[in-house]
Length: 282
Image 1: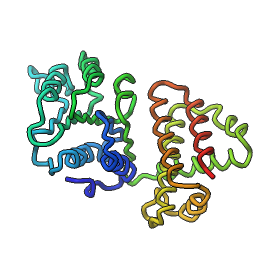
Image 2: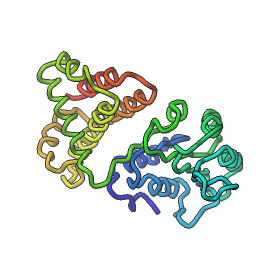
Image 3: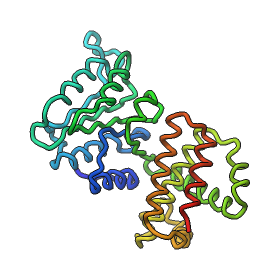
Image 4: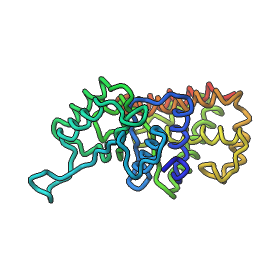
């Protein structure tokens, strides 16, 4: 399985492709999104790209950790316990068998219990060479902030939902209001923003910038988050000086997401992000 098989997640696939194409693969990733959004399937596709071979039939350099019931009670609660983390550490200490690196996938990582999260944190603090770790999570805050802060976050959206288009529309409205009425209007609008709203605004800005990159490249409207916004996006794309400015704005979105994970206040995070995005625009 490769990236071409991943549907409805262009943002996630684009982020991972850029890491591969630029030889900037991180040692740890967190694939964050709702159940059914293709997180685990994408993790296998990413592993296939990293290892250079389809891994769906197994590969000696791919190790997948999943929650299991206690050995003493097959019907007990499924969890990722300390023993599974120790086995992951053991696998990581070995040299890759066939490929140039090893890939470790922790599915449903939010089910780490007991001493497992702390052991996993120590593992991430001293990452072994030639090893890439992928956590599959429903929310960034489903694991301790100390764990998620050591991962590159890759966001997955619900498939077929209208939420991404609404988020882009809201981000466009906030940016236009700030342009028209200045930062004072922006500060007033963000006065009561909570964490959930901040996450939506950040995601909307990310998708908006991504759509602008596509618009500047002449991509068909069907690839945009909301094809109905194609004309407005084309007009906005013409205001940007170059693609590098857009890529820096996308990086600002990633940093804003990480700031929320590290408990920076939602209002400050949104204010800072929107101000940075506005500075990048022509």
